[in-house]
Length: 243
Ligand SMILES: [Zn+2]
Ligand SMILES: [Zn+2]
Image 1 (tube, rainbow, N blue to C red):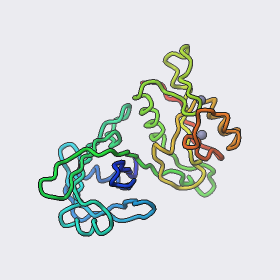
Image 2 (spheres, rainbow, N blue to C red):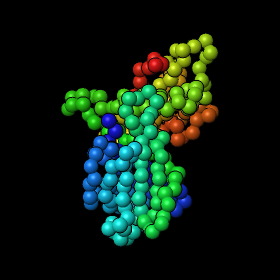
Image 3 (cartoon, protein in one colour):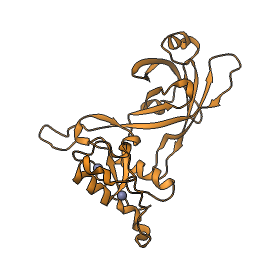
Image 4 (cartoon, rainbow, N blue to C red):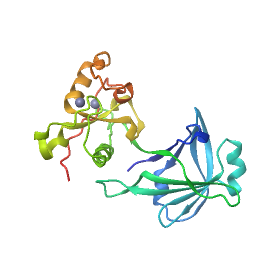
């Protein structure tokens, strides 16, 4: 299970703020008063105060009303936010990923509007399995979500070289793609999101780990964004058969 949901606001007014919400809120089925979650405003971390109200199809976060003054003081917009989770392809659970977010200001007669956001699920990873273990915890589910999203867009494409595989691979074509951690999993505990992963073909993946940073320029389509920090081991997922 993911641990957090990160909501990156893309509307101009929000100036790139990110709300960090506990995934467990989505399992709560009752109204809960006086909660708070962290919000990143630039490099500053503030605390957003809200009441949580379950709805038929989603969750309502109330940052206004009695919380309006405290939130406004910290630079948080007081208002109501509704998150309606969308079902992710190839997973049984509902994930608030391609999610709709509706927002309205905390003022009389304000209407809900859709604001542009990027939703990321955060999974805890990188914890040592034991004192003598060289391996660290990782989430296979995260990799399958990455694959599921790529599949949903149509053909899988290597984020490094752009290949979509050979026609002759037929239904096995997805097996050439692997999921790469941009930040090496051996680097210690962290919260991993989809943005920290790249879907690349097995050739590029091997080369990437074999060559190290300098030689990465051979990937003519690649940006630093895709490559991350390739030194150290990373999760090489078993290819999944299409289903
Ligand atoms: Zn490739
Ligand atoms: Zn890798």
